[in-house]
Image (cartoon, rainbow, N blue to C red):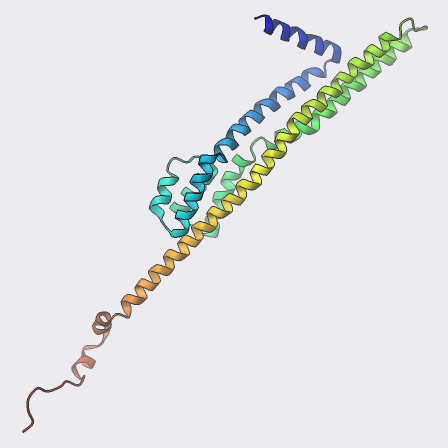
Length: 246
């Protein structure tokens, strides 16, 4: 309880010294931390060790055309990789299906990225705005007094105004580094989605080639040739007589 009261008092003092611009900056910092935690949890589930091992097994099963094993691997997988692989197994790996499925998962990969980018841009600008307001107030203080009795009044006002710039830069930097990490995860995820698509298409091509070879081998077998030969040709084919010549 004492810690909460101390924190509340410190925040109130910070807002009082920095001005009204401190309020949106503090709100941006809370939003940024919340979105960073959410994205960290999402990417931990998507690119965690278990997910990577499951993805390797899935690609191997898709390349070999083992649909039963692949379906079992993605049955409870709610990551973008599992959703895409499940749709490819159900609907095929044609180009139209691939584009539709990947685009349906792109919002999950890029979620909150625009918001984080906006915070990175807006926080320093808000900080500079607060500093400008603080300097204006300090110069108004100078203009109202014919003689400056205590220079510390002006310097204290400028120092307080610079708090907003410092806080704005801190919020931007705290958001920037996770944002760049998340961007790298997005690119890595797209590359892994491409590997799933390539494995699925390779498995389909191999399965089609195997079925065509089986059909061709069946049509070229002697029994099939005998069935396909017209009866008239079989009747007129030379036969060896077992009776002796007279």
